[in-house]
Amino acid sequence: MLRKINPEGFRNLVEAFDASVPVYAKKVAFSCVGQELTFSELDSCSRAFATYLLSVGLQSGDRMAIQLPNILAYPIAVWGALRAGVVIVNTNPMYTEREIHHQFKDADIKALLVYEGCLPVTGRIATKLGVPHVLVANAAKPDPEQVLPAGCAERFVAFGQVLSQFWDRLSPPAECSMESLAVLQYTGGTTGVSKGAMLTHGNLYASSWQTSSALDENERNDGIVIAPMPLYHIYGFTWNVISCCMNGVHSVLIPDPRNLDSLIQAMKTHRFTGFAGVNTLFAGLMRHPEFEQIDFSALRGSIAGGAALVSSVAEEWQRRTGTLLFEGYAMSETSSSLTCNVPTAHQLGTVGKPLPAMQVKVIDADGETLANGEAGELAVRGPQVLKGYWNRPEESVAVIDRDGWFRTGDVAVIQEDGFIRIVDRIKDMILVSGFNVYPNEIEDVLTAHPDVFECAAIGVSDERTGEAIKVFVVAASDSGDADSLREHCRKLLTPYKVPKHIEFIEALPKSAVGKVLRRDLRK
Image (cartoon, rainbow, N blue to C red; front, side):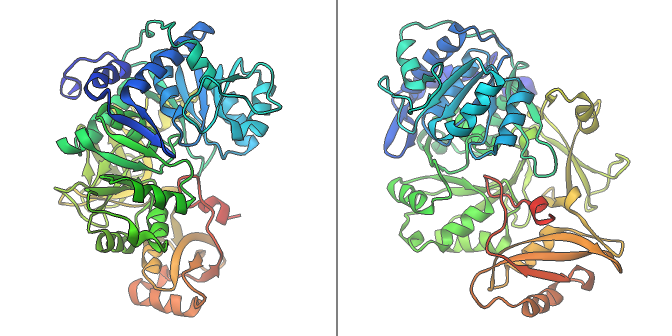
């Protein structure tokens, strides 16, 4: 299998990237708000940054946090760190002080590249923790004349200046293998304390190979993808920073995907061939008054991941763009690749079939394999599955058995035709009078109602039934009525699945990538 995935025998990710650079040297690798970075420029800048990291004494295996939005400095820093053998700790710029402190301390970071807008909070934490090396980036293409914001600590340095200083002082790359740690990808913390998934060079290379298997030759050579998914999230990281780089694909970086006006403008500007997002983003775009002005004639398909895709959203997207919306499924622990619908095997309502080199099964509470068609916990095995959790050996053993099977924590059904349906998270399951109720099913039914824009279902304590279903609804208009929504549910759901409580709210609490935070609704 290793020979099939890596026939060239690359020893690490950097060797694979170096092999692609001469092929695509003059082609644009990344663009952002009107500025561009070619593959040749990315190569040179990353080499300069690697030299800096080695010059200040960082060793292979040391951790560096990157806290940036989607800007050109991000891919430069990633490939520079990988060249130096430094482990990347992707960090959400919108994290609270508590979350940043936890992640930096847990990873024991030795360096930090931070966006200047995050300095008021992150700079203070870096100083408190004594992070030895702190670099500051801005939204522009790296510039040797970059000036640090007023009030910066004296020891902080400008990212653009560093690249300029080390441009001609290149060091050989660090010795790394496919087994070497490349990334600590901290889980979203939607169901508990955020912990670092240890992803190796081999994990990420395998993920890139699996993703590339779904691309046709034209997509590899001339593809242009709109990239609103945060690069600090495993979805955007493996797709745009790793896989697209290795396949010569141009990624149009969107610094703030919540700003739909700027996202729409980027989609108007580029004749894009690919697009990736989450369900809430697709729904929001289609509500934008300028959506019909976008040219979708070059689009070959869009990928939906990160959260469950609502069928009505997929159907509307296909009708209005003339292209399919392919739902996939993965997680940080699987390097963002696991299953996906593809043009040759697509079934709405499923997350597709396993990607190449993946093994899947559904198990019961005792770990016994269940037959196709039965719901149970999805367990997976493949070359992109995490090595374990950083400094958490007991938790690692709890989810990865001796044979390498990883327990996802998701309830799934493997159909007879091989397509997989994700029923819900085990921890989100609602127990009503002894019956299992999965929020995704309730939400899918309610979202099809014209008065519902989006919704989220949770379980609440109930004296008679143990738990009762409560749904938080964001109305599509001022005509939202709880009784009409219950009547809609009664027509499509068995009685114990009909929500007992319906509450209208202005917006659902979400993570940075648009995943609904049910834990916040339970408070």
